[in-house]
Image 1 (cartoon, rainbow, N blue to C red):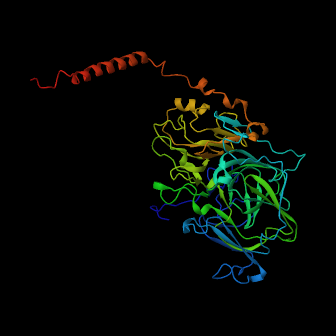
Image 2 (image 1 turned 60 degrees about the horizontal axis):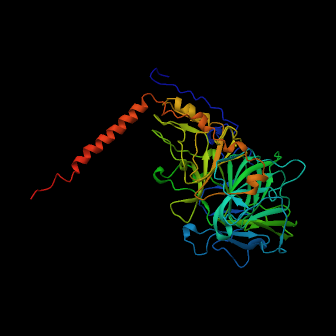
Image 3 (image 1 turned 180 degrees about the vertical axis):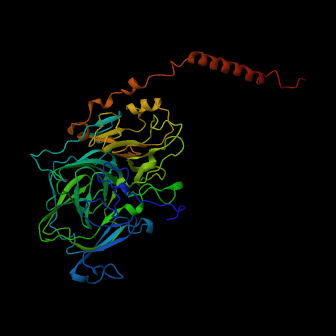
Length: 514
């Protein structure tokens, strides 16, 4: 090699393996779009009309409802939007299955250990506002002495509106330690957005299977049937669910960001068709309608789709793939820049709900107090820490709990970080929020809280109303050297200024004399 030539040596970088320690998904250095322990294959891409077959050639060519399907299958459709909705908003899926969902033995009411409340109107005495800031220590997982599946382990924390009015939302926790054996769930009120916090879930839907881990989200549309099971090696699971009524989850517009950033469309994963091995087993289909449970009894599995095509399909997204954006010069960017998914309201300028991510990222603003400033937002904000230290309102905030700030409730500054930031003068780039992830559910609506959240769960912290911020943030202005003299001088200058201006308004000047 000549002396003028430079030799390049490639030094391989060891991939990280702990997903809760990565700065970004790319640190795993995987060529697959899924984590290593995810056993399933998926199709990718937000906004597509996907299709999938267990047996190739099952989908009818050139039409949706032939006189007779291959293999004796039945055609069944599920429509999510109005029939005549604009093409961009029209959502439906065609299913080709062994037996249609209409083959059942009728509806029956069932008892449950869950605590579900879906009427969030002021006339309902079972829900109340929490005008103060609030914090919950980790919601308790069920004990080994009882088996609680998803049907019994779903508990409403808060919400606004009513599903019967097709307007509003609700927030839940799920606390489970058992599988849904020969049971499926159908939410006929709205869309569920799951966010796993502890324990891996093996989820079966009519359209196929998905694997959900802490730090991932899963969305299942209204009317789609699914079963929540514990993955192998998981003894119990906990997580959060945000439900929207009369709206649907979608990607936020990017505006001047351009075509890429935040949650990228190609990172959303959809299941491939799967059919149960044994189709001739009894099944209960638990339906939630207007917040009440009723069950359908049938003699066959609902997971009998051999093929499907459409855009009403459950999906999942890995929050470690979020492409964060932020200020690269000065000031603190509004939290809306961290929106993963949004659900519109009837007000075109105000969303019903936003689902936000707060995870590892670079902080580079200079000459700036980089943490959030004290504020009184118009939005209701419910935070939940998935792992790590989290971003709650106190040092007691732990993974598996929750923290709440109501609309126009003054907040900020409930940590040593604020005090340290005021003393730290730096323009150096730094990594923040490493080894942790927090989510926030934000809404323009006023949240009303259930009895479960206020008393039954037993984890509402008594310290949550302690305004200890004032012990840490003293009045530095009043003790500033010479401040009283400055205030007096400003007052005197203003009075003198008024006198000077009053001269020009003297009625004796500026007039002709006759």
